[in-house]
Every structure is written in structure tokens, then in C-alpha cells.
Amino acid sequence: MSQQLDIKEGLLHRKRYLGKAKRVVVKVGSAVLTMGSGLNQTVMENLVEEISFLRQSGLQVILVSSGAVAVGRRKLNLTNPVLSLREKQAAAAVGQADLIRFYEKLFEQRGIKVAQVLLTHDDLCHRDRYLNVRNTMSTLFDWGILPILNENDTVSVKELRFGDNDTLGAIMTKLSDADGFFCLTDVDGLYTGNPCTNPEARPVHTVIEVDKEVEDMAGNICNTNLGTGGMRSKIMAAKMVGVGGGFSFIGSGRKPSILKQLFNGETVGTFFLPHQEIMGSRKHWIAYTLRPKGELLLDSGACRALVKNGKSLLPSGILEVRGEFGVGEPIQCCNEEGIPIATGLVNYSSLEISKIQGVQTSEIEQLIGYKDSDEVIHRDNLVLI
Image (cartoon, rainbow, N blue to C red; front, side, top):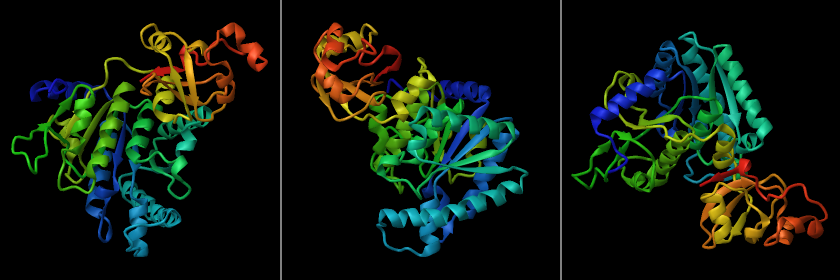
């Protein structure tokens, strides 16, 4: 596979990036933290020991922890396999208290103070609030406090959700200027095939870059509660981190001392290298944190101007407006086949763009009564997909 390195070369890369790291994000899922009777105390104690090891090694750490809903379900003895939204929110409120209390107790035994930070996607899709979260993280680091993050399931609805804590962890890696993202889950890592059915399947130790071939490997797992979608979200999180200039690691959170083994040069889990071309913080926010509110269908000339020539989007190349959105909101730019090619922030609303699509910039003011900009999307606010 073109994106895979051999073991020896991969270990050299691991050593290089781990040796330079100053700040990391550790994400652990509910499948690792919980068992039938509630929190898995042994696993949590191992996790706390691992994070203590990282901090003793000079690293600043953010912990992104799932588990609130699962803990609440078990504490309340909610046996129904499918909970309504309000039941999940109530279970999260009950479970989050137990989860943070257990963490606080374990870290306090090691002299580490913790802070609880609960977020929704809405907290990060506004630039000023995004930067406020960043400032809070910075202050907590200055005070030597370990931030423990989770999605605020108590108030989250579909429109406000990250979708999973893998995405939250990847976003926080870029937001906090962390060097790496450690995703601890209930699988050992990636495989070239399904090891349960394919005797030729081999573990993938180091990935150069997440491409379609790597994404297609998301289903190559077995004996797990994750399912294909769960592993795919982890690979996409690694891609998000890589584009932002960080490395990622996927490994078993149930394996004692897995992070110590990783730092000691053992071939555990799957390591993802940073991309060669690094996306800046603001463009990364546009591409990976914001959610498009609509679409603009572009002709071939406009697509070529954006992709090949690095130009801004002008109204003359717009064929169709899809959806309703306001000034400054994120949208996707698609080619004539409807395939997304870019994401950006618009200078005009969907109603205004529908009036000026296909025309020259000199006609904008005549058609809508004003002209703040020649560009529908300026190049500085545009990210190619």
C-alpha cells in the first residue's frame, strides 16, 4: 500500500514526532471506559496513570472523555437499548457527575488538578467563542490544570452535536495548537483486511497520509463494539489532525501502559504522520469545524479558477444556489456534477446570490442595491476540498 511505511522506518518517524511534542490531546471512548456494572475502574486507573506519565514527561495534556451517557444508563438501570433524546440528555446529566468525580479523585491522588469543560458544536462554530475556548485552554495550561472535555450531551441536539468525540478531539488538537492526538479505543488499530476472516490481513503500523484507500480500511476490524462507522470517524479525525500539522495514534485503551510502550518505541497501534502541506488555523476552522449551510453550483471556468488558479469566486461562474444562508455563513462550492470542490464564507446571502448569479461584478449594485465586494467568496475565506 502506497501510504504505508515499513516497521523500521515507521518507528523512526514515531520517535521523531513524539520527541518533539509539547502538547497532546488524549481521547478515550465509552466502549473502553465502561462495562456492565458501570465504569471500568481498572481501565480508568490505567488511563490516569498513562496521562500522569505524559505530564511527568513534560507534556501538556487535554483529555477528551466519553462515557457520561453510558454511566448514567447503568446508574439509573435504563435497560431499554434505545433511549429518546431527552432520556439520553438526562442520563448524561446523571452520568457526567459520576464521571468527573471519579476522574477528580484519581488525578488528585497523583497531585493533578482537573477542570471540566463541556462543549457543543455551536460553541466552536462562532469564531469569537472558538477563540474564547482557546484562551480558556491556554489559561488552564498556565495554571498546570488538566482540562477534561466532553460533548455537552445534556443540551446537545442534532444541530449542535459534533457527532462523536473523535471529531471533538481532532478539533481541539488544532484549536489548542497540540502536536498530536491519541485516540484510545477498543481495537488495536488498522488492518489491511479483516483479521477475523482473512488470514493474510496484517496490522498497519504507520500511515503517511489518509487517502481513499486508507478510508476504505475502516471496516477491517472485528470483536468490537465500534462497528465500521466508529472506526471511520477515527480515521477521519486522524485526517483532520494531519491536515492541521499534527500526528495521530489509534490504539487499544484497554491495553495497560500502551502510551508508555508507544513512547518506548514499541510497535503498538497505528501512527498517522502529519501532512506535508499544513492548513492554517482559520482555514482549518472553516474546512473542518463549520458546517455548510448551502451549496453553490459552479461552471467549469469557475471551478478551474478556484482549483487551478487560486482565485476568488465571482458571481459570473455561479449556475445555481441551493439552500438558504446569510452573509458570512459557510457554504460548499460544487462542480456541475454536484461534487464538492471547496468550502467558504460568503459575502452575500443566498437570496442576493440568486439575483447576481451568472452576471459580471459591475452589475451587482444595480441588481441588489449595493456592492460590498466583487467576490461572492474571497480567496482568504475559501478552502479547497
